Amino acid sequence: MLIPHREPGVEEDSLPWEYQRIIAVVRQVAGPVMAREVGEVVGVDVSVRAKLEPLRSRLVRFVDRGWSRKLPDGRFTTRL
Image (cartoon, rainbow, N blue to C red):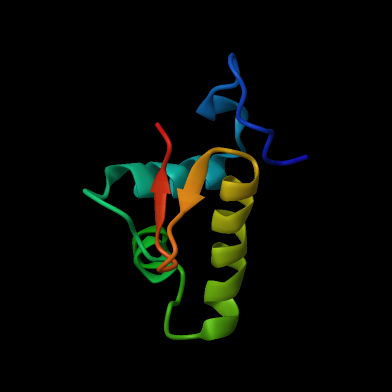
């Protein structure tokens, strides 16, 4: 499992480097962020939907494992 479930004692450094970059971007933004905005910062070609969807999938995986949450409007934010 690339992304472990968020539990006491499990820190961000247990995530693979690419996932650490993604969660850092979500945390640095002043408020909730769209996948497109994260993609622009981490260097994904956001004009091509096929390149943006894998990033969106990673963001949803963070939600599923308790690292972040997804708002009803599709934006992502950290739980921390």
